Length: 175
Image 1 (cartoon, rainbow, N blue to C red):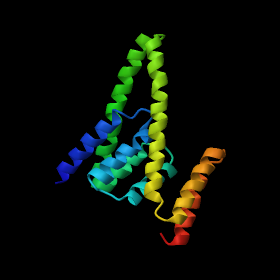
Image 2 (cartoon, rainbow, N blue to C red):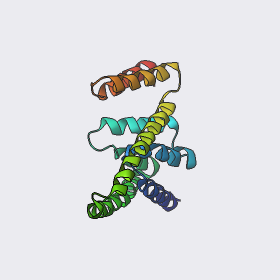
Image 3 (cartoon, rainbow, N blue to C red):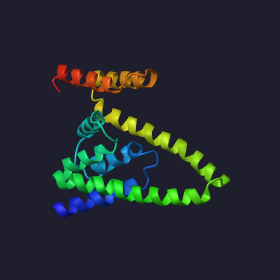
Image 4 (tube, one colour):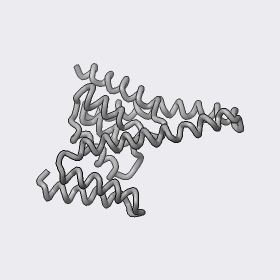
């Protein structure tokens, strides 16, 4: 059973890593689909909490993958999920960098690169919606999600203030 779960982590995160245009956060909806909807390893709220914890920690955004793997299969799951998410995309990026260097200045390459920008923006927006859906379980948390979005969008303050505020509201609500 455990080996089957580890293989599901490998196959799921390796596939996701190959389409991670815009970074790991851009494929957060796919991660959600894998661990919440397809395999039901955790709930929407558990997913949102792990994402928030990963964002509060210093380091790259892809830390969430390790936390998801840890939840599913302990420290081995953490290692398997992290390697499965980072190795394929790293090899792809390395290969593309060599290819791009050879093709530098080609008009078709510039068109493709410009075309990937809205794809990445759309994937990141979808990530925000997935997280809001998992975290906003009532009118208070819904209002907090909306206020947080506006705060991060319209100010230059650190998003950590949003996490602190969310934590205080959660404590006050007894969550």
